Image (cartoon, rainbow, N blue to C red):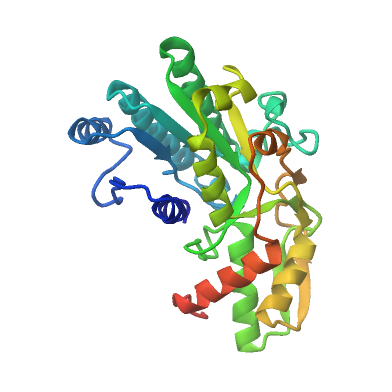
Length: 307
């Protein structure tokens, strides 16, 4: 989803000679393969969007997979990029890097000031390591390696698998299936009280391209060598219950919404402070309702079947 959105925006901006590889062509967890790839190509700029991602269930069930794969991917790519003389790199992290009970909205300076959310701790630790690796390469070698921390993303190309997806696409599929089958109720994990911020993936891609187009002076004057990442979000949030009601309306589900409080809520609230991003000249432009409607249309068009 993220990589496809970045490609759409880079091409729309007239970027040429964009170099990509699919999972079947290049295993980013294999150091030798990554080094050979960088040796063979003439790469000037890197957008590091590759990662193992998933929702609460996937993170909670497979923490070893999440910390291992993400550490390997980012370590191999960042090190190989430096070795190959790449002039600029953008590492994409996640808002889950912040403490579970961080002050809201969460500023970049909140990093490493408290305990992480246990259900996605392994993923968060890997992403924190990626930020710090980029900062370390800048301090030691002067590398222009930047980091962006997107909030919860959704949009075309999302994962709609109920076992591994994030909350918004999971709810979109649940309510779509329930409406199609005429179900009287939909069960939603947790209490419905947690609040989340959602950003359309096309807005995320636009923000990343904007950050990478800034000169070194523009970018590094707004951040610091020890707090170099930039939050990428819309600056507003919504409760899971409100999200469920919105998605029910979009999908045409008219039944009852039931909340299963025995299932984990995750972090109580995750809203990013996007003041640093705004100071660098970018704000989100796609409304949540419009974004969800477009994602729903994409999901139906691309054959997500009712089970």
